[in-house]
Image 1 (cartoon, each protein chain N blue to C red):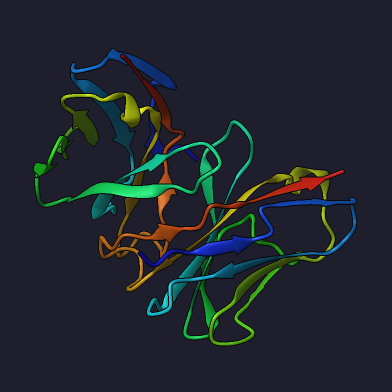
Image 2: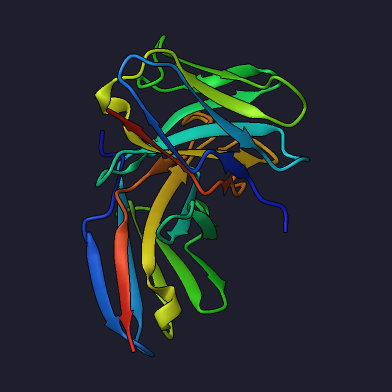
Length: 116
Length: 113
C-alpha cells in the first residue's frame, strides 16, 4: 500500500539552527501539507502546497518557515532559525484532491523535532 | 481557536461494548467531517468521513452520526476491540474553509479486554 514517508524520524537541533524536514508524498497525489502537533496539544495546520506553490498557510507559518518541492518526489519543510517553541511532531500529508472535498489525506509517521 | 472541539480527553470501554466519541464544531462553513485514528509513533490514519448533507455514515463497526443543527457529531464503534485503543481525532474541512483540515484535540480510547 502506498504511504507517505518522512525523514528523519527524530531531529535534535540547537536553537537558532536551520532544519529541513523531508517528506516523500504518495506518487500520484497532487496536494501536499505540513501539520504539527506540540506535545499535549491538537494537530495544527501549517501549510498546503499545490502546483508548485503555497495554496494556504496558517498564522504559525511565518517567515521562518518555507516549503519546497525540489524534485518530482520530495516535499520539504525548512525552519530557518529554530526556536524552543518549534519543538513538536511534524506531519507531512498528501491527497489526490484538495481539502474541502471530503478527500482523505494520507499522513506520514511524523518527524519529532526537538530544539535545545 | 476552538472551531472543532472534543470535550472528552479519554474514554475507557470494555471489549465488546460500544464506544461513543463526541465532537462539536462552531464553523458553519465545514462541508465534511472526518475521523482519524492515531497510534503512538505513527501518523493519523483516516477512519471514516461524513458529508454535511448526510446524518449518518456506516463502515463496518464504525458509524458516524451528524447533527447539523446542534453542530455535533459522534463516532460509534461497536463492538469495541482492544486493537481500537488509540487516539481518535475529529477533523473538519470545507470548500470555503480553507485548503486544510481543522482538528479537534483528540480522545484517547482505551478498550479493556
